[in-house]
Each structure stands twice: as C-alpha cells, then as structure tokens.
Image (cartoon, rainbow, N blue to C red; front, side, top):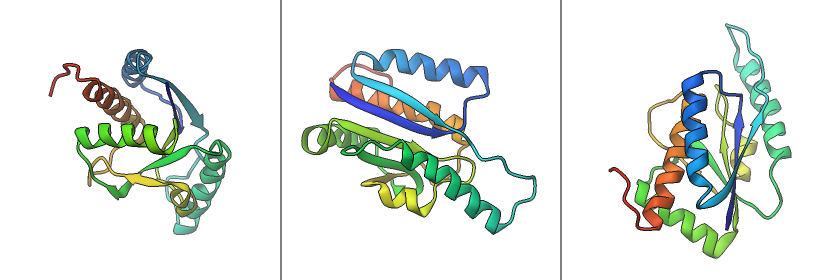
Length: 160
C-alpha cells in the first residue's frame, strides 16, 4: 500500500475545512496510508518587507525539510509547477508508486509559498491553477484530488 505524507504549513482554522479534509482522509483509507503533518506557520506583521518574507520562507522551509523522510518521492505544490489533469495526476501517482517510491510526500506551503530550498528538494512541482488559493483551502482541494486520483485509478465512478 502506498504511504502518502502531506506536509502542510499552518493548521486548519475553519470548521468546514476541517470537516471536509477529515471526510476525504476517511475515504482515502481504502487506498493508501495518508497522514498530514502540520508545520508551524511563521507569524508575520501586517506590513512585511521582502526580507521579512525571505526569513519566513527560510524558517518554514527548515521545518518542512526536517520532516522529509529519506527515500521519499517529494512533490511540491507550487504555483510555478506543472499543470496536469485529474487523470494525469492519477497516472502520475501510479507511476511514482510503481517506478520511484511507495513513499510520497506532498508539500503545501504557507501564506508566502515555499522557499527555493524546499522547491529544490522536490522531484516534481505541481500547480493546481494559475490562480492563488489560500493554503488552508488548498489542503481540502488537494485531498479531494488525491481521492479522485485513486477513484480514477481503480476505475470507480466518481462525479466529473
């Protein structure tokens, strides 16, 4: 069985997001061992400088990379990453599991994204859209797409 770790900056604050993520996590149990590791989000002031952002990304990045298990296939969710369809994502998961590693780590950054150092640790970078999403909402969108990918791979019906 595939082992999937989602390293996510920050914790979910909204009840509806927590409930949605929990629902998909339950559904995913049938397909893979999935865990979410929350990394503390760096506090930031209302007004931040480029230097502040760099420090935030560096600190969050260090906490992220500390959680990356050796031998894992790392995928960063990054607005500058590749765009793929849900079917393409399902194929990608299958290919990684078959040819690379049964341990996959997906990384969801915080408010300011991911540091270049974290991005450099990723074997693949994925973008879900050219639009920007709040990182907490992205967690829900991601676990839904993960579930959808497993449904596609197992030829089960799931709404289109």
